[in-house]
Amino acid sequence: MSARARITVIVVAAVVAVGIVVAAVLLLPRVWAEEPGAAPSSSGSPSTPGAASSSPPAEPLATPTPLPSASTSPSAVPDRAPVTVVLAAWQVTAAGIEASSFVQGVVEEGGTCVLHARLGDTLREVRGAATPTGQNVSCGFLTVPVAELTTGEWEIWFDYSSEASAGTSDAVTVTVDKEQ
Image (cartoon, rainbow, N blue to C red):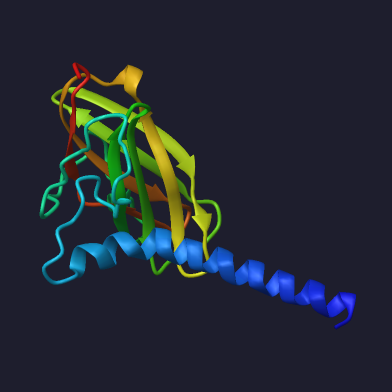
């Protein structure tokens, strides 16, 4: 086999591997939760058996409940197509509240993702650039730093906006316990 053919095979294998990893990150949490008789893990995403956790896991709601944002929701912005934002995975770690989401069925450049965390009148927001993945737009993982959190039941959700579209995910409740 020529050197050029070997390089081509390696490049194709790398692209396939990246595609599998992206698909697993975006789809496994949803597939895991939909399996009959399967209990979702406490982090909202599949976990590795026997893996140690540095902090207590979050307790996701069985059915996320919509939560209005303290500000105007991007989905209410005129002249933007509404989109479905899916809160894919979340957990509480030593770093803070970590969560990821994706925008279903949209592939576009230039979008912004905002992870919101609210406890009573306290609202924390973390912004990040959205990344097109080929079939969706990924918000990746964003983290509300533990230094900005207090013990309690925090409601979290994502907003997505671009020049063309906007949307808000459903909210879930996570437990932060800084006393452990």
